[in-house]
Image (cartoon, rainbow, N blue to C red):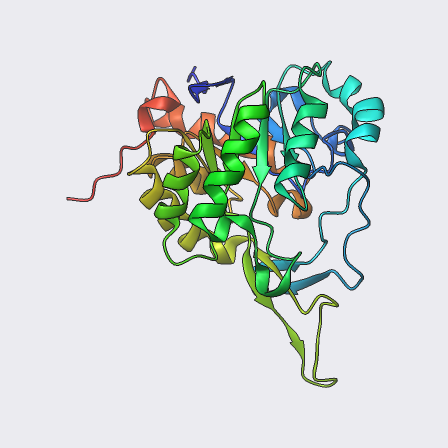
Length: 304
């Protein structure tokens, strides 16, 4: 039997498949469909210091081979999460990442400080890259300086590992990733969604009330894969890859390009059993190929 375990350096996972934030609720919503304990882990919906309503509807629109969302990080806030959700997650035998959000550097720090020491959290994923909150997708991860300063502030406040979630809406993602590493990030996850829009020709109006949103799904996989390959080749800290992963073969591409784990996002909305299916198919693939440990595949891309 293939050993699917992977070591992120700051955390060991039973397998490299995680469910991505924003498509998996707080995890409990998927418990009627899958055994959450089978996952390498999952990332809960983004949490601010207080509750957040998100953007006005319509907030979702289909695109060719993908989905554009402008949810706006709607959520219950850290206090309700800690009181009602986290005690149930703490009983699970899997890694739980909390996606941390903020309107300012100070709010990111407040969220982390509030969650420090809470039982059941394995690591923080710092959401500095959501493209549907500010004008033209502006976010801290579009600037090396902002990425460095925010990661540094959160890392200094955190008692847990910090993973910086990066934006693809930049000219040089390696530069941003290096800034996150310099700021003290224990790892990076990439990529978040691509800034996109859709227009109704009949009404000549955007299909999203927010005008722009984030494109996810199979359409973005080739670009996300390229970015993961570029970043993994330059960083000393681990990379968690994501972007259009819906099959075990998709996951394998990211691992071969250097990701030590992957996150499954939009596929969860199509098939609530996607994560478990990918884990099972990954194990079957490795056994057929005689691969004893999935870690043997990480970063083995041949470019010459």
